[in-house]
Amino acid sequence: MAGERRLNWGADATDAQYRTGDDDASNRFVVAEDTDAGTILLEYDESAGEWVSRGPVNLSGNDLSNVGVIDAAAVYTDEVSNSDYNETVQSFSGSGTFDVDLSAGNVVSVAATGDVTLTFSNVSSNPAGNSLLVYFEDDDGSGPHTISWPASVVWDGGNPIDEIPGSGDIEITLITDDGGTEWRGRQGGGDFA
Image (cartoon, rainbow, N blue to C red; front, side, top):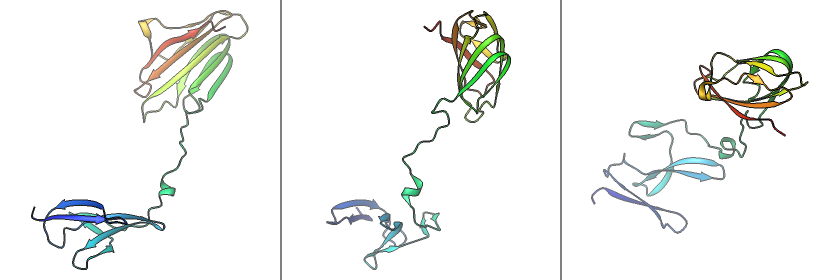
């Protein structure tokens, strides 16, 4: 085929790449070579019959300019960072209003001695998803105790879970995918022994 070019490389020149195009000097192969010193752009100069370092290189109007050394070790690491990975627990005890700060953790433990009201703060809006696991227990056996939730919480089956059983416990799971406009809640368990 007219204009087809083949590029061979490697120690034995058996690696090959084919490209079709015009035979003019502006239509050349460009490769990135990984060396011990970093990564450099190379262009094959057919008239000279050799590879030459290039930068900037123009690829159909898309300039690759100010090309420097790329240090893969500085860009990629083996470490994954996720603030929710360790499931930080927020603990509350007593009665009254407790503010659940979503930036501080997404597991909540409430040791209730009376009625409890929960509020939510710092709900993530970007990304908009948050989840909560809330564990309630009647800490002193004086229950049952009432649980009051934010108005944004809707319930599986339409029946709110609004009571900590006397001398018992209950686990609630909540999730939002719209930044806290609506939380979907359901009982995850209870009466753990």
